[in-house]
Length: 108
Image (tube, rainbow, N blue to C red; front, side):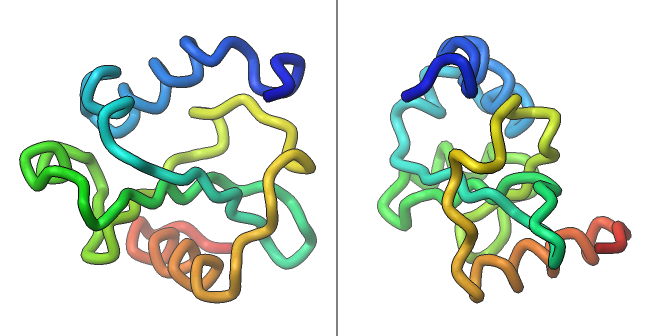
């Protein structure tokens, strides 16, 4: 991982855990993937955090904003990152992120 782009892994983990309303230990104990959410112009809008379907329900229940697909949206400010370092989301993830933004009343 390029620390120049991601900052310290600990502070990134702390920010993400805090945004999701779970502890750092809980975040680190569940398998998850962070997917950049880009608009049509390629501008980073935020992130979709996709959790494993095998994650303990006890932890998943605590995650703020978790949807039925075991994912949660977090604003770009939570993870200080270079948008070029993340892959563009697959079409399904992009639609899901757009749906999450609409659910929160944001426009894309």
